[in-house]
Image (cartoon, rainbow, N blue to C red):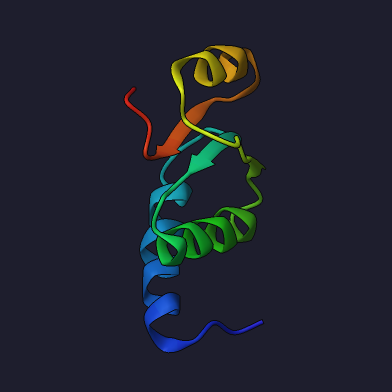
Amino acid sequence: MELPGPLALRAQRWRATFKATSARRLALFLDDRHDFTAALFAAWAEQKQVVLPGDNLPATVRALEPHVDAWVGDFSQ
């Protein structure tokens, strides 16, 4: 599936970021819907497992720590 122009550019930048990391399990939380969509497609393109928390509250982050290798987006980590 091909993404529309501006979204494709964002996805390319995210894909380069994900390609550069050995992390396999990513927690993804972004308030910006365009960045979220681009990052999600990019992560999938790089064969990453994506965890989508419902919020980015400290208790949620603590609960997910054993299950993710990296935090992507709007986390205070």
